[in-house]
Length: 161
Image (cartoon, rainbow, N blue to C red; front, side, top):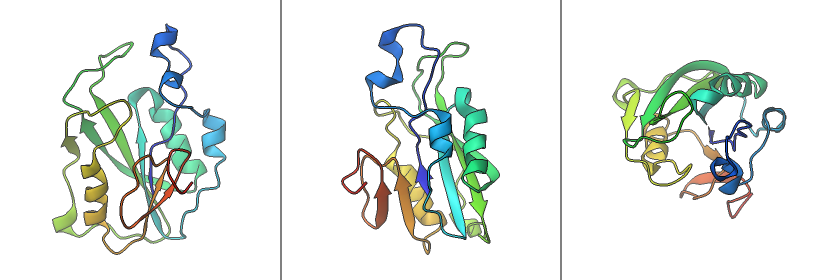
């Protein structure tokens, strides 16, 4: 499962910086309460940001997964922030059941440096990385906006929510 939840940020200093100007968001309780269509043996790739890291870890647990590791996406462009001018996002990796680690040749670097291409858009290279890491597993993208061939999709911006 590849998921990029619509995190709600409640501390915007101006209405111009509210995430809701881009898309509808969900509060943490609603994200945690989702009925996630996870197989008994499953890997979760969950996007979060530095301010939402604690909530991201909660989602991992509430969805029935165990945290394993993370990767960092260097967007190569400085963005907004209240303490740091943020240039990265965090991709949490978690499992449930019996999932082996990827073959050694299919283990990517933990820092992924790909240019940012618009608000909340994730690089297609990340989905390709997941396909290479776990070629034999079925794939589901939650909160999908751009469906990929061979993937199931779920979300209010996908054609098959």
